[in-house]
Image (cartoon, rainbow, N blue to C red; front, side, top):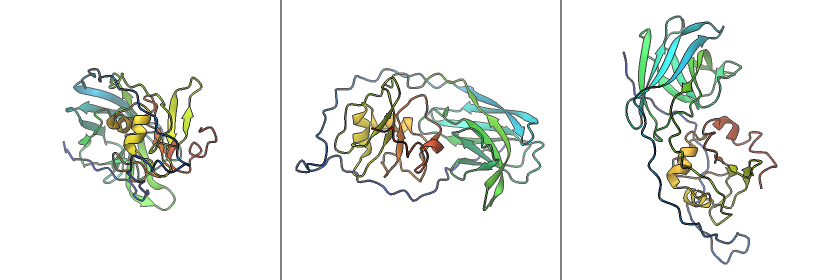
Length: 268
């Protein structure tokens, strides 16, 4: 078995916003500061269980089963992915963890979480997950290594992951306390009034956004574990959509700049 530490490959190039937490009070175009209610002490959260925490059936492009995939917990933020490689017929394949469904066109994005695959018929690799909760990864993609102009990398096998983890932050409650300096962007709300997605505006700052929604900085990062565009932890970026729904930590592709969601007129 070969254990390889994974690297997160992401395209860089997003323009960081100012890290300022406020605006001059003399600026009449900015909303007034809104005081954030005191946050209750964080209750004790569940401990990550050891052993297998996700399973899936790996299938080739024709739908034929190739064997079972497992994800095991090795500690607070370390995990092992175990993948069968028999029958793939691909030299030196790559594995990708995707936070969305497997692509219908058989082409994978280079912004998925890529892992090196070795030569054995049964392969294992360690990978880190800073949030300690990898359950936002929805599918495993096994791909060819070579990229193509029109397809990125070709997917040769996929597995939908089923997680057995309990909610790791069941105490998260997201409440919009109102626009403020550093967090003056619009919000997409659910029909029941819950905030679902926040759209950043110039001069926004990560900590101010978290405070607006009654969150710790780390909780906002937990809700957005895979941001596209080379996003640094704890930094807000221009025109970015930030997830506020604890049940939808994945699907980052739907929040890409220029996506249908980013252009929605339902933000207010």
